[in-house]
Image (cartoon, rainbow, N blue to C red; front, top):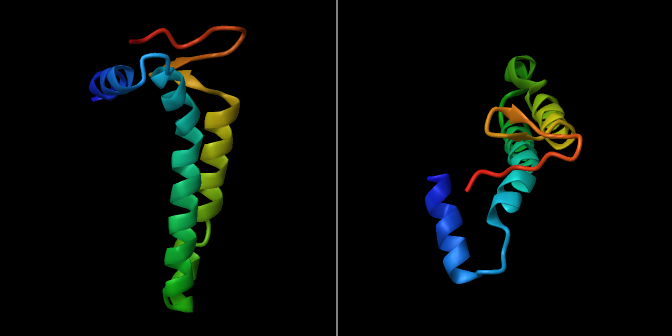
Length: 86
């Protein structure tokens, strides 16, 4: 799926860097989940809150982890390394 998405973007915008966009988007997925969890919490009975109260914060921590410790697939990036998958 990744390869198809990258190819489609390259076809539409040859000078774009779709691989980098995917890597930058990884933390944003968790921010989105944190917002959805909070909306869920805002709409449920207070008696159910203890079961889900930590979900938004957990997703924010995952977003920070993805931003601070990026990966290329399962391989960690850093120290000047970049994602070379195409």
